[in-house]
Structure formats: structure tokens, C-alpha cells
Image (tube, rainbow, N blue to C red; front, top):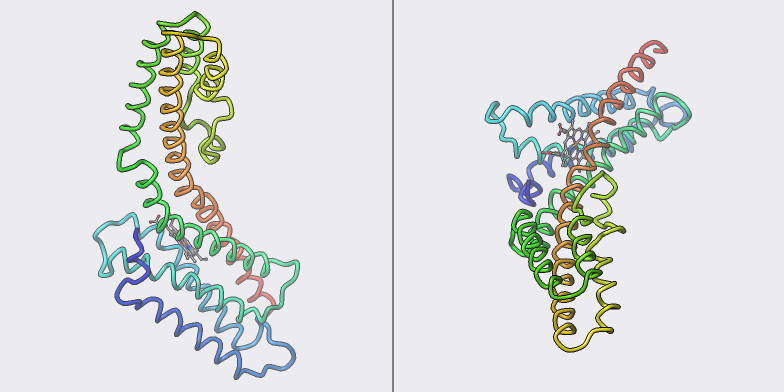
Length: 276
Ligand code: HEM
């Protein structure tokens, strides 16, 4: 997905969404129900029905996006409409409810819907912004290229460390074996490893370097330069993994809460008809 989704067909779906919001607002302003506006008026039922249909249709997108090349509308149509009508839904549902909230299944459905929409907004931001940030962060390379460079530098570190004492050899070995990119969910999202072997080796080498002289001091400086370069590449690799994780993480809210929303919506509709 790209920014073009937002301008797709010359903002056609934005126009439809704005039209829907303006009509809802007009009806809400003109309507003068007995008592406070609420979901039980004719307008409440009308906007509630539109909202429920929109939710089912927005959910259908999950099915549609897996059926490439089928149907009259392009996937871009679906995506653009999903985004704009998803935002319009918040407006329609809020007016439909008459803003009468309480501790009940109706409000639960509204809250779930709002969380799904807000997570969708984050997803939109992620899809538009993060791919470009990833490319910039990797300076045009792929993650495999970055990892290959890191492995190359690790080898060079071993060579240089061979010219120094055992402590340095051990440090370089630890820097190689105790340096990880990625890992569990939190490690990926944080983009940082507090126990990174390379960071430790670099700090320790800076301290040790002060005790060397002559050729050893040259080797120590060379090693510090290599470790610093490796650290910089690791920072980029971890940032890349972090951006990739951010691209997916919002879907873990968007999709399961869509299912919870459908369940709450079903109970909401059944309850409304039971108390008709
Ligand atoms: C109640 C309203 C909404 C519902 C029920 C809903 C539901 C869904 C579902 C079921 C998917 C498919 C996920 C998958 O199978 O991978 C999806 C994808 C998506 N939704 Fe929503 N959505 C809603 C509102 C929004 C809003 C307001 C936005 C943005 C402003 C949004 C942005 C997205 C994006 C960016 C995708 C991912 C498309 C992709 O991975 O290709 N959604 N949504």
C-alpha cells in the first residue's frame, strides 16, 4: 500500500465518506425526537443499521484481500474505501447512538469499534510511512546485505584480536556469539538489546586501549573502529526489525478486536430487537 491509496480515483471514497457524514449530521440536526436523541429513535435505527452494515462490509475486506484478481473493483478500491468509510463509521455510529453511553453491551460494541478504528488509523500511518523509513535506515541495502557486512566485520575483528592478548580475544569471541538481532516480540519492538555483546566489547576495548602502546595500541584502535562500525550496522539491523514489527503489530489489535466487535454487534442487535 502507498500514499496513492488516499488519493485513489481522485479521492472518490473520501467524497463518498464525507457525503455520508454530512447526510448523517443533517438528519441528526433536523431530527427532533421526544426526549434526548438516542439509539431507539427512527434516526437511531437508521444510522445503527448503516453502521452495522458498514462493520460487516469492512470485515469482508479481510476475505476480499485474499482473493486476488476477482471481482469488478480493484484491491485499491477496497483499501481506499475501507480507510475512508471506516473513519466515517465512527461519525455515523456516534450520531446513531445519540451519545447515550453506559455499562452495557451497546457501549461495549461502540468501544470495540472505536479501538478497531483507532488501530486502523495507526495501521494506515504505518503502511504509508514505515516502508520509506525502512529503506532510508538500510541505506538502500537489504537486511541480508547488512547482516553479511556484520558477519564480515566480525571476521576482521578476530584477525585483529589475534595480534593482542587473550582478554581481547575472548571479548571478540563474546561480541560474536552474544550479539543477536531480533528475538522475542519485545526485543523486536524495542529495537535494542541491553545485553549486546558488541556494545560491551566496544566499551571494554575503549578502557583497555589506554594501557597499550606501539603496535598494540594501533591494533586496539583498529579493533575499536571495527567494533564501532559493527555496532552502527547492528543499530540499523535492529531498527529495521523494529520497523517491520511495527508494520504488523497493529493487526494483532485490529483483527481480533474485529471478531470481538462482530460478536458484540450481534448481541447488541439481538438485544435491541428483544426490547423493541
Ligand atoms: C470498525 C471498523 C473496521 C473494521 C471492522 C476493520 C476490519 C478490517 C479487517 C477484517 C481487515 C483485514 C485484516 C487482514 O485480514 O489482514 C482490515 C485491514 C486493514 N484495515 Fe481495517 N477495519 C476497520 C476500520 C479501519 C480504519 C478506520 C482504517 C484506517 C483509517 C483501517 C485500516 C486498515 C488497514 C491499513 C488494513 C490492512 C490492509 C492490508 O494489510 O493490506 N481499518 N481491517
